[in-house]
Image 1 (tube, rainbow, N blue to C red):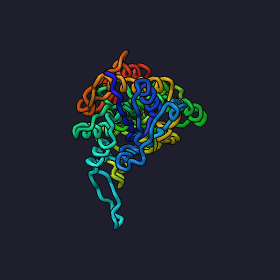
Image 2: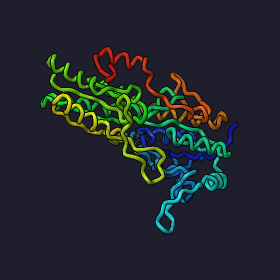
Image 3: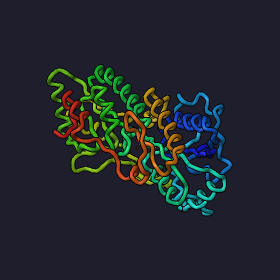
Image 4: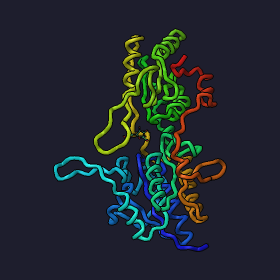
Length: 365
Ligand code: F6P
């Protein structure tokens, strides 16, 4: 089959290092097959205002593999099934513009959309697939919380950034004999906290999968003190919570975003440690630093492999699937399966056992 396909590609949700590498791979692999590639800007916005669609050519994507961000732009408040608009009175109104997007897609003669996104964007892609717009998803998120793929690109870079930050905190914490509490991203999964905390030799790691008791956290700090280690490093995932307590968040924003903005657990834990142990304690939030910058070699390669595999699977006639990393290969899973469940850290995983063997506390015992 030597069909000349017209491929569209977009990036949705929070950005993650490696997005540009996927765009590069999709463009290069498509051009090798004589296909055309069109970049849809700002999530699905480019399919509403089609002026925003850009033709992607090898020349256009030269040099982007090592760049963070996305040349197409992205948004995590652009769900076309519930898009917020300001009406004449300045009030926010929610509209469903999905029909318009599907009709524009068909009018432009596009054959398949490669949707690069996390669970939210892939859920949207799945709904479009059900409306007759052929889609192939590529899994992206620094949180690594998609169940149907072994790993998502962006995660390795985020973990490396967090580990480097933790390494730096050791010297200042030790100089002042302080406890430093660092809050990392990850939403409802503890992957970033677990991997960076273990690699960075934290004393305590708090993750959403293991509700903690603040007394256990303080005991760990004070036991270290008795043994002569007079400073401490606590890594708290933004979704971690105390036993019987609630997740701490900043509430829902008014801009049409579906989920709450997590954040604040690091500050809470630091305050409790200071009060209960008397140790000088500071907290910091790594925040969007974890999403920025150049992708690591691992993420670049993974992103290139995802993009190239998406094109190969399209050539084979596969539609309405997500590309999944299934080492040593790439595989596909139906989109409805891909968005079914999230991937939490298994409590009996080797990484948890390793951390415990290193003497790291999860605040549960
Ligand atoms: O899903 C990626 C992520 O960075 C989460 O780790 C975090 O909770 C959220 O996005 C932050 O979203 P925003 O970019 O809207 O602040």
